[in-house]
Amino acid sequence: MNMKRKRLFRMVPFVLFVAGVCAGAYLVYNRGCSSPLPTKQTFYEGVVYRRMVSVVPRPMIAHIITIDRRTADIAFLVTPPDREGDLPLDARTTSRFLDEFNVQIAVNGDGFEPWWSRSPVDYYPHEGDPVVTLGFTASNGVIYSQGRSNDQWIEPTLYITRTNYPSFSRRRPDRVWSAISGDRMLVNGGQVESGLDDKILEPRTAIGISGNGRFVYLVVVDGRQPFCSEGATFRELAQILLDHGAFFAMSLDGGGSSTMVIEGESGEPVVLNSPIDNYIPGRERPVANHLGIYVYP
Image (cartoon, rainbow, N blue to C red; front, side, top):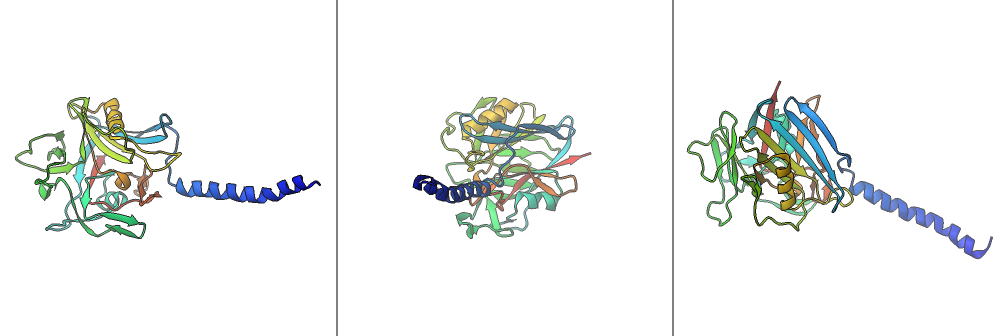
């Protein structure tokens, strides 16, 4: 055997080792990645789930739940306060919220404080740590956060009546039953909101409603996972909602907070998307509040 061939044979273990390390790193990084196959599934009568998969201009996986309020018997729940005071909520993952309050569908809610994420071991909040939402929030007739009313930027709010009718309004109702605020409006009057960013890719969460309030749309887009789903811009998120029929829509807290959960057949929480807290795929972030939906038989 000549020297050149011997050299090639000696390189084989090294090449296999490098390939194995690369493959292992890819599998670890993308271990929480959602299935790359589009799907459509009816969870309950009037409740349809779609997984939308795109590869152009980049990988993106979006999870969309459409609820027909005329067909589905539902009720909304915004996370109730745990106490009075400046920090009225205990942080929970979306799975914990669904399990604790026995709702059938849940997504993460508004942004919150205090919050930091310096490393996988240096972050706040952990589950049970006290926090407060950034925007106006109410649950079952109790207003527990007035939001940052002194700031120039005031978050949009979805109001939900006692009879479970959802609506966006620039003017706060005289009587508030439940309310959840978001980051910004995405769709307003059947049009994509002007000035939305079309450059920055992130995991996203959003809620929309049809013009007559019959349909409710929950959207979560996976992100920060190369070769799986890189995320969406605000403009792309708005277009997804518009394409599915939203007349009004707002984004909720995104990034590592973005999570969509349903109740499994045995009552356990099932995470539909691929959350990525602290850049760890599959890891849920404890957040301040959530939007839950009861689905009655």
